[in-house]
Length: 347
Ligand SMILES: O=C(CO)COP(=O)(O)O
Ligand SMILES: O=C[C@H](O)COP(=O)(O)O
Ligand SMILES: [Zn+2]
Ligand SMILES: [Zn+2]
Image (cartoon, rainbow, N blue to C red; front, side, top):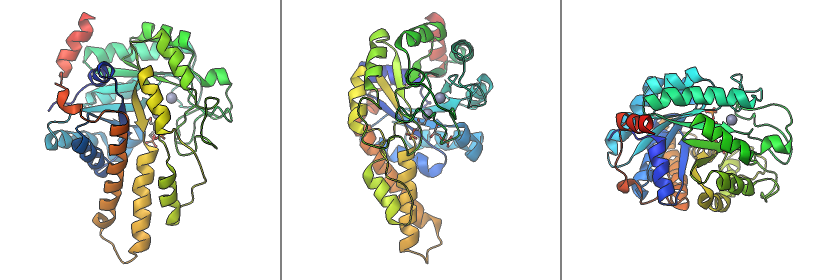
């Protein structure tokens, strides 16, 4: 099956009242885990690769691994999405490497640290939309700065984010500005800042509305009822994964992520894409730690990768089911990029 665009997937999700987890992938094992979960639950798939993933695996490997997934699972629609493109050239190189969707994150300047001006964000995002849509490829933009409402700190754990303190206003996407941004750029999906941040250390307590602003999503959705919203930094960092990691020599301080129940509240408010990386990392690394401590004599990597893939698969299945994406894959007929390009040209 041809790869699908993000736009087509999120339109289907909106029409059928569900959301899709977007899993960050870096290698064969991640892709196998997501695909096995999707196959078991009949779920459509978003595989996203960051700049770090592209540098780690290489574009040719990533592209062929994902084409391998499409061949192995011809009944599952798969979108290959660039996560956090830092400048138009990064998005264009992804398009030429077979990505069917790109994120132009113009909320920060291309150094990944300096908070960008609004006009800069509009300009770079509109530039990418023009090029991507001509090729039928979808675009996700981002407005507002991801960061922690408890501390005011920007999101820098994974090397993407502001390093100083930000005001509550800067850390929450403004609904009126979101309306203007979508009108002026034509993005297919909009990532919003609501108090989530990347990595494991999102909250020091179970989040309430003061530090995880689902209300901001509701206000944006009122202004933009037809825009697909994206939640970044939305791993749940469940206690059992923290315990697994720590039980076998890991050192993770007690932390809270975005509870699945809060994500479920955001789905009727227009959230259609939910980014998850940390939970997969934790499940995978926790199993590898466990194996190494329990089997110090083993030196065949397959013996520790198999349980690591299996646990990652379980996490993916849980998210597909919780976001009601399960059962949807077989309902989708993929539109290829030239058809999407025609649609954009006609709009
Ligand atoms: O938003 C993400 C990737 O863009 C991943 O977020 P997590 O670190 O919460 O998994
Ligand atoms: O954007 C954040 C994702 O978790 C990707 O992280 P990464 O840049 O370390 O691959
Ligand atoms: Zn960002
Ligand atoms: Zn992100």
